[in-house]
Image (cartoon, rainbow, N blue to C red):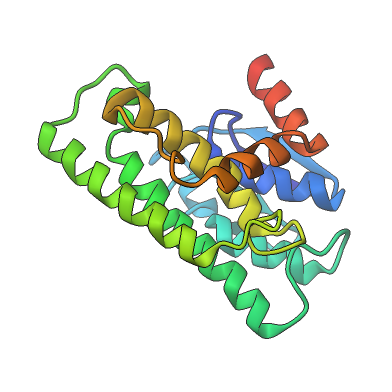
Length: 207
């Protein structure tokens, strides 16, 4: 059985967890925090979560784990069939990570951990997030899912990057991240209604 290392508050852990639940692939949860100590670095070379243990060894990095799960050929396909449409899903995943997740993450210390960030950092994050949302506007289809009419890994990335970035933007930057993208707000509600998302939310609350 696959073993998924991570903890319930981690958005990247929850991305992989949602993929496993959507595919109905059995896995064991190993409660693990990021660390630079002990033997965990042999499993995840940067000490990050999530990390997936397979019968052949360990895999880290969320998008790489997505590819591995898809290559297993088990359960519901979360990638389109054509090479072009697959590339468009991966494009959205990368855009969401680089232009939404990462700019917001520069302000996470103040948003979630009781710290403070400089006004310069906030101004840079605000500008980057505005550009990121415009990028997603141009690439996303929202019909109703972000890459088209089928639920994909890009929706999973959207679910757990945009929600966190939006909360951070509201708390620290005083901005409604999706104010000019009502389609994305509708998608957030659609994704939150999925059984996998509700299971993850319940596990977060319990944990």
